[in-house]
Image 1: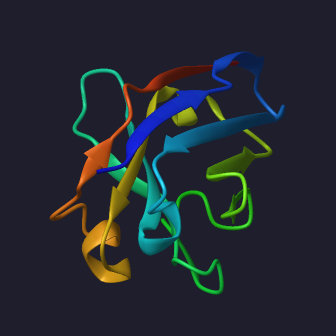
Image 2: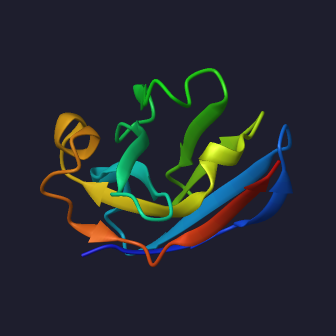
Length: 124
């Protein structure tokens, strides 16, 4: 089973950018659809973005479209979330997750692994 570790969170001003990385252990990284989720303070966890096994298909929540970009490097077992034009409402703990199918990852269902999360704080 894959294990995931996120990095890259921090404090940024509104309008700024951050790059989150998720490093995966194990030889089966390329067999997983990868996703990013977030949990704002006092709210439930929500889907942010996902990328298919080959990287050929990407999916985004409406709230982050055109601002965030998900990518992966199967040779390096990493998935990256580039976040631009950040807003205070993007403040959350961001989690990396792995699952077998695109649509179940987007739905947040049947996920095989979660990272521990990384905090992103956007100040106004």
